[in-house]
Amino acid sequence: MNCRWIFIIIALLTKDVKALVINENCDSDSTSQAELIGGRYVLMQSGFPVVPKTLQYQNVNLLLNDFQYGINKDLSISTGIVAPFYVYVSPLFSKEVASKQRIFLGDIAVTSMFLSDEKMLNLNLIYTGYTYGTKNNHITAALGYASANILPSSSLVFQLGACKQLSSNIYLLGESWFSPGYQEMKSVSRWQLNSAGQPILADPTNPLTSPYKLNFPNLLISRNTFYINLQIRMISKKHSNKSWSFGLMYFANWGGKYQEQGPFGEVRNLTNEFVLPMPSISFIHRIGDFRPEFIPRSTGIKWLK
Image (cartoon, rainbow, N blue to C red; front, side, top):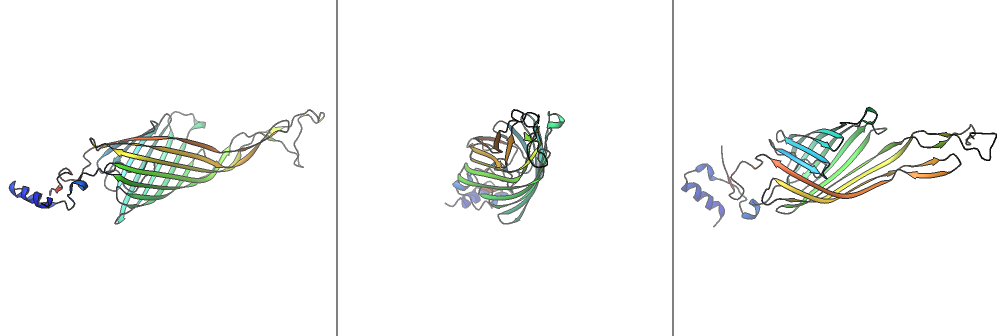
């Protein structure tokens, strides 16, 4: 017997006509589907904000502790600590503009907690993006504009993220960030040069053994920063407000080449290349009544107010 008729019979027997609004998709497979936890992929924001009136805690690699709260269906805010030095706040506005299409605008402001003034970090990233798909299967492209006191100039940040539901409670998700720009290499050893472009000796009277005079300028060099994170997210079947994600993160910084010159004519050709692959683990716990306003998913009945 079709499950719709079962619900109608139950409603009539209990004399509760409010139960006659039936969930159209009431087969056991669809009603037992776990709902994707989180408005983010890992760090990157999707166009789906946190469920309204719901508090959500996320931990990434034990270092990032993040609290997200859904203010309403379009607006959410998060704040957290990146251990052991940094704190941040990040509002997000998201709007559905068509079926399966959302646009969003957000900002991330980061600052230091305990570092001294000369080592203080102040960073801001304002970004906008577009998400296509359903809550469980979607792709997002975003463009940001980042400025920080540790960088010589502002730079663009390109982001791409995606989520694919593999089963009722398992998801494949990933994100990538790319930012071109410049960075400053501090106190690089360089020869002092005369008007002819030749190194100046510290002791011109002894040209055979005298070292060169040195300067230690700061050099501005190009840099490219790339980050990618792929994870499998598993939502607990027993407690569907909790999930664990496991994967691999890769960070790389490269681009600029420069020379370090020594007092006796030695030269080292250097680059700002830096690569860091590492495991990626995250945990999410959602707090609050995040279910839609109908009887638990197993019944498929929607209650009218």
